[in-house]
Image (cartoon, rainbow, N blue to C red):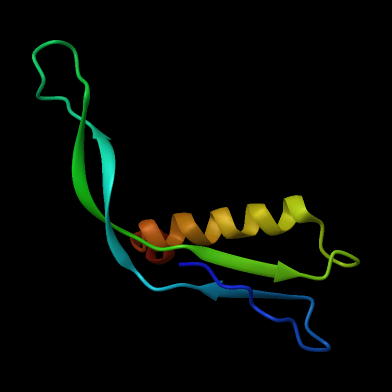
Length: 82
């Protein structure tokens, strides 16, 4: 479910993508006549792990980078848009 990628010299950071698995997830239900709600739906999920040398990379910068990678994975057409 999660990994701990190992940094090798002279690297300062490494990303470890994990396996895609199907899991139940709560999603908003717009079809409910009483103003929404939630329902359980099967979704494909993947964890992304990052290890970095904190002498070089700040944790906030590493987390921001992982979020940017996540957005590109969720919407790959953004890569083609420029």
